[in-house]
Image 1 (spheres, rainbow, N blue to C red):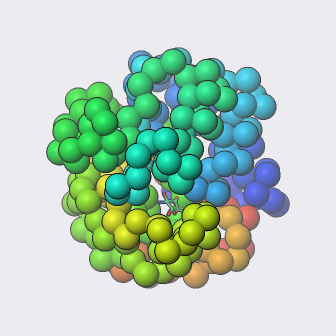
Image 2 (cartoon, helix red, strand yellow):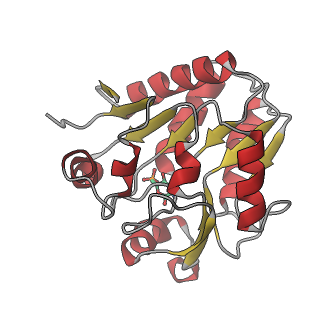
Length: 229
Ligand code: GLP
């Protein structure tokens, strides 16, 4: 693992964007792997600032709330359509687990396998240690599937919903094995509220810490503003 300790979220987002461009352009025929959430918003802004126009044919999202139509204001489909397809002028296919045309998890997994490996996969970290929506306890062999969200995740993410009680309790997510097929992983972890999850993943690996499954990946880059010693 390569670790970059950065001074700020902004510096980390800039570094991640530069690395993403470099890794995706080195293998332009391969798909890219996208992530969502507040951490990633800065990365897409920096990609836009760099004038990056993705030339790949396919982009895969990590996860999606179950039951939200793609036009819903809180769907990850909508977030990525705005931040990646529209803002960067991406002309290829954006494929989201749980959404058409690959709404069936097995079909998503199969297509991901056929098109892959992904050149570069962006990743954030949940405060409870989840990767995509692979909650603590997820098998490291897991593939794309429907999962039940943990209470901590519902608490964290309901703030994004105008009516928090309407937040879905389930999601479709790439599995840990799916994510790890990527040629390169960029894990971004910003903010003190992620410190415990990150330290646990680094120092006390196991099923309780899904991010620790990434540690043996041959090309993992961690970008963080946290002091991890
Ligand atoms: C969300 C997403 C993850 C994301 C993580 C961190 O729930 N499912 O893919 O990386 O949790 O989110 P945030 O960046 O908003 O803290």
